[in-house]
Amino acid sequence: MIWKLLLALTTSTAHVLAIGTPLGFGSSTVGGGSATAATPASAAQLLSWLADSTPRTIVISTTYDFTNYYGSTSGKICKPWTCSPNPQFAIDQNNWCANYQPSAATGTDSWYKSGTGYSYLLKVASNKTLLGKGSSAGIKGIGLLIQNADNVIIQNINISDINAKFVWGGDASERLPVTIVGSTHVWIDHCTIKNVGRQFIVTGYNPAKAITISNNIFDGRATYSATCNGKHYWVALFTGSADTITFAQNYIYQTSGRGPHIGGTSGYTQYVHVVNNYFVSVSGHALDSEVGAVTLAEGNYFNTVTTPSMAGTAGNEYFIQTSSDLSACQSALGRTCQANTLLSSGSVSRLNSAVLTALKAQSAVTRYSPMSASAAASYVQANAGVGKIN
Ligand SMILES: *[C@@H]1O[C@H](CO)[C@@H](O)[C@H](O)[C@H]1NC(C)=O
Ligand SMILES: *[C@@H]1O[C@H](CO)[C@@H](O)[C@H](O)[C@H]1NC(C)=O
Image (tube, rainbow, N blue to C red; front, side, top):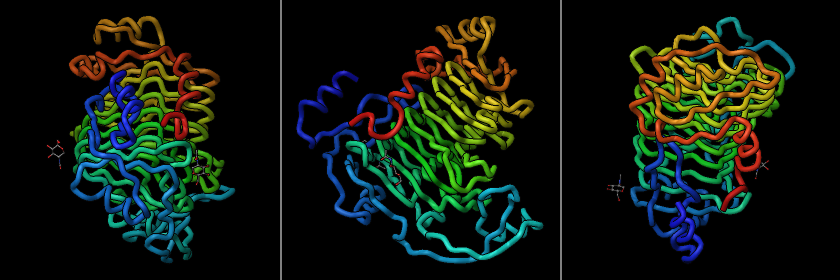
């Protein structure tokens, strides 16, 4: 890591590298490697550079606005939530309203196409680094699709404003800022994501392996909310058939659910190390380990979180709190483990020892050196999100 920093400082901008190295599962991610850094002249050029087959280091320092890139459209919507004020609406994609919300009120509305599906998302191919420089590098109105790619780094990018009023309830495309499907070696670091229709980050059904999601801000402050309280419900969804994900040092606030939701399909397995994150002002739930989940939660700080982890869901989760949890973890993993801290938050009781049995064979977890929850709380508030590095 030191040599990389020195290299970045002492050479010209032609050899710009990401700052630091990924923790945990994504640790060998190199993105575009030593590809010469260049700045796209337009949104169209950014789109083409991300998608082509050339290894690239793409450096941006302003916001590329895709909101109206593909124009807008209008159509049928429904209103699955009846709470007030300002429930989110749902676009009637593939007859979703009639199929899943037959009693919801319907209407018509308009939205921007750039947010609405696989055909519009910004495709990110293999061997790419997208680096934000300074504090105003961003992508607006569109999400990134990292599909069947190997080696992608997205660092210091502000991602925002993707049809935040609407949800489409299907699974194929839902206005997602970052979608990782069937990809390996992906590092999403120091990004800030806000004001979107659906999850801030998801994996699909094909495996997402060797992934690190670190030092990001998931800002849940929302005008339109599925829970009608100004807090975004859809935070993160990890559902691949064989995901390995380190979710570390992220700052999650003013949300109301799915932070993250892991699993849900039997026969699939997601190894997710949720470590040293800082959650604050969460009116619903944070962790939700469904069938297939193998979740180790350690060294996280939950401040005013109604439900730090859902009870009774079918996945395996080991949520460390007591000295006996710590010693079981330490004897399985062979290193110091860290307890989660719950401040003004609900209680948790999730201790599936199958998690320790599975993860003791994963060096990304056994070699991880977590901070204490209180150190993580300060570190994350000072360091997460866009504008803190580069
Ligand atoms: C990415 O880079 C690696 C190493 O330089 C190379 O072997 C691989 O073929 C590249 N992948 C693609 C899809 O271009
Ligand atoms: C991120 O983008 C949003 C929406 O464009 C903007 O309000 C916010 O100031 C940006 N954040 C940073 C850190 O640049």
